[in-house]
Image (cartoon, rainbow, N blue to C red; front, top):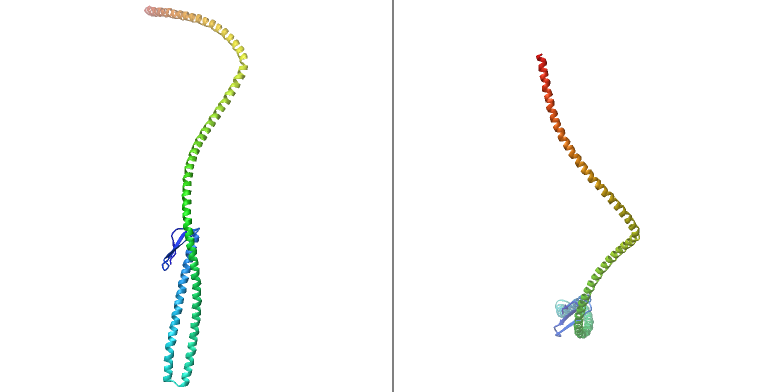
Length: 290
């Protein structure tokens, strides 16, 4: 018989003489491995015990055959070759040898009987374990059917839970989008609040400025009066500037006229100077002549 692992938690072996297949289920793979190792150990031990019993039976049969063959040959030889004393001594030695051989055979028979009892006990235990394994196999088959039903129920439940998870994921995505919108709205609200605070500060500044508006108005009136007076003075100054411009233009005209007259006078003066030079040269010539 050979134990075979058919799955991680189930194993089986076949008994060809009984034409039966046995199976056994386990709660874990470690227990299945331990059972397979122990099964192999028991199988090897049974094989060794069987071999030893066969060797003992063969040796006992050989000894009995040798004793049966040796006694007549020995007696025949003694009767032919020896005297009566030699025959008696030789017969005593043969009897002692036979007695020892019989004792050995008795011991072997008792051991074989003990081994037979032991094997009967082991066979009974194996039958009981076989019955337990059969019931366990039936129970495991029933449990397999139950597990199949539970598996189908769990699979349906798993499909339902997956659909539920998908729905929850969609809801979570919607919640995340809403959270993002809320964060954006919060940021916008914070920005508006900051702008509102800035506007409030500006409004406070404007209120403070509105308190000094009357003073500013009086100052503005005073400045406007000064501005009007300055405009009048400016107008007078502009009139003066225009008159000065006209005087300057007249003076420029006079200067140009005087320049022209001076130029003509200088030209006349140059002519007169040239005439004086000529007259001086003429006088000098006359002086030299005289």
